[in-house]
Length: 254
Image 1 (cartoon, rainbow, N blue to C red):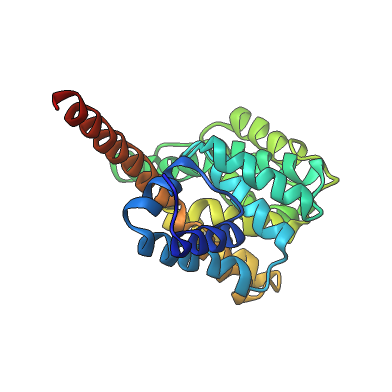
Image 2 (cartoon, rainbow, N blue to C red):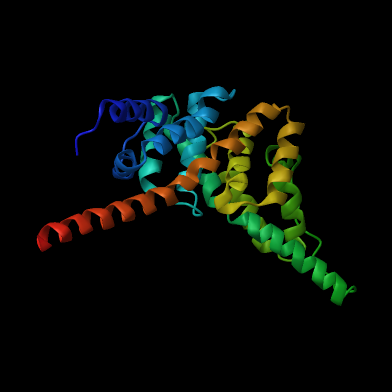
């Protein structure tokens, strides 16, 4: 279908703001171009107005699209290319993917805390292991995990040890800084796909204690909101398929 001059303006604006064009955007452009233009403004605003570098913005998007709570392949590919073009290294990306792999631990920490509370209520004399030795270096590099693993180790020191080993040595050591890791972890836990308020609180506290600006924290929180448009994309493609199918059926009946 040929686009009008106004539709072409919106398409060009969208590509400039978001860096891609897909079948779902084409479907919405034909049916509801005002939505697409306003979505471009809404989705693009946090990326272009906050203090984070384009490299860091793209790495946040890589984390969110790769997360097991989202796993959106087309977006991941787009933002991987964007991150590398913005100066990110493969080591940066691998460090992001390491954090993605660690995300499941947040539920383990929270659930173990609940287990401890319930055991304490039902069996106050229940003895647990004394934990595991943890270096000050580890606690400094991983301020949230450090305290949470101590609690985990009281139940299962062996598991806590391998968790600590994975956290400490699963990264490349050549990519993200400690502060960048904290920002990625805030983004992963603040995103609606796997919102974990207690983890968000702990990572924000650690970030502020390390001197990370509130404006940077706010930006990584904002970057996750518009990923919900992937549901819109699915709906738009299905709607367009029905419309096109009905057109075909109408043509056949004539």
